[in-house]
Image (cartoon, rainbow, N blue to C red):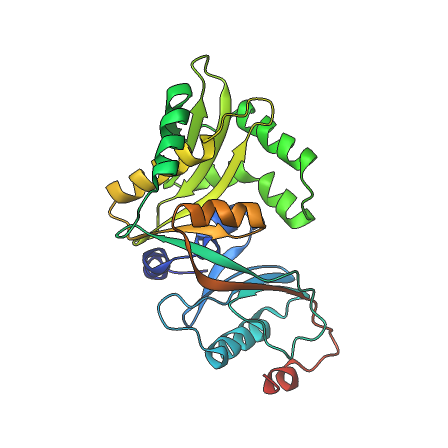
Amino acid sequence: MITAAQQHYIEDHAYVPEHIPQYVTAISKMEPFLFGDFVAYAEKDRFIFVGYPLEEAFKGKKMKRALEDAIKRFKAETVSLTAPAIPSSLENCVRPPSDHYYRLDLSSISISQKLRNMLKRAGRELSVGKNKNFDEGHRKMVEEFLKTHPVDEATRFIFQRIDKYLSSSQNAWIFDAKTSRRELVAFDIAEFKPRDYAIYMFNFRSNALYVPGASDLLLSEVIQQAKTEGKKYVNLGLGINPGVAFFKKKWGGQIFLPYAFCLYHPSRKENLETLFQKL
């Protein structure tokens, strides 16, 4: 477990979703730990290692040492590693395609006239409200997304536990876009606990009640809230696909971190110390 001082340190320097203990612990039911400048989460025979240092610049050797310490301590059968780069020595890990995090610098944000027009149009049809009540309308929209989009089991598991995350975080908010009849058209979830960052966690929208610009209108409210709270940046999340990446670039989002993932199953017979000497 982490101490209160470590919790405060993590929250001050968090800049990716995996740094947020309230998020990861609610989804995974794991306990947070700190290994040097790296966050990890562990439970029984599995653990998650976040290879993004909280304050220092990323260095592969430092991450290797912290990851080695974590593996020695937990002796896990399943290791999930997210990092700017995966050690080449982890040959038998499952590696989905790499991606990038996008970041919006709030000190230099510039909205195009085309985007302003889109916001005005959406604003005439929709109103935006902020709340913490993840209700049946939100659940149905998530279920609709899962039925109409191909997602892996890990993503499905996360989406089905969003309510757990919201109930555990005092700084996560739902931003709803609704019609004059109070029909839910789209919603965002954003986290505002980090000192310098707002983190754009989730976006869902209705297929049946599609309104052009609804997601833009919601993001504009997230940005305004971030400015109000004195944040410097908004982590807009991963690119995921060309359409999502275009949306983030449209708002001025810039690539600021590579993202790689490895799901690794250490063999009980494997000498981990020898393995990490190869890094």
